Length: 206
Image (cartoon, rainbow, N blue to C red; front, side, top):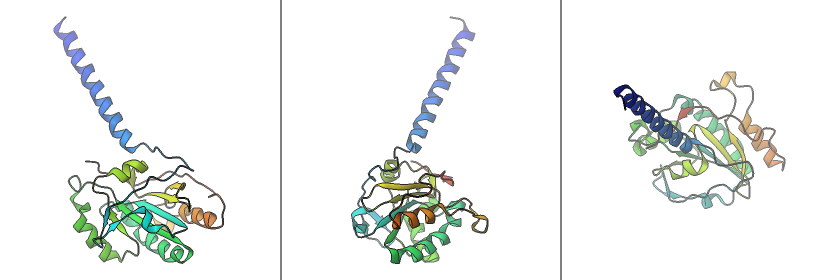
């Protein structure tokens, strides 16, 4: 084997490893859920109220909106007021929003649990804000970014997933995907768009 051929083999091997690593990373973000699938259950997530929260805590809700979000992401922050307004508007109709931070504070210190408490207090969150310390919940839902929305129907099946609306800038948003989905579901109808393209900051995996 020539020295040039050996170097070529090493380069090819390194490229193969890089591809495998990239595929593995993509696998964490691959969405395994489809509309109509049973929503992955979860329990024991600590909230900014220092209590343990489970999906079963919201058994009385007609719909549960799970939003994977965080403290630092500009896109997630841009949607905070819209989420607060959504809970205010739809809470009386039987909708419960639950925010879950899936980010590793080792990768992004601004997403630590203490910072979560500060952010929730600063913004006056009117919904639970929970820490997915193991990142298992985010992986089970196939969350890819912050924010990423999943609406669970009364039977806790996936009824909508994707984006909150079509523009990070609230004044430029034209299509309120999430509100449209909630309105339809509360009337016993299918959402006009059950799947939309989520966008935001990538989840910071450990």
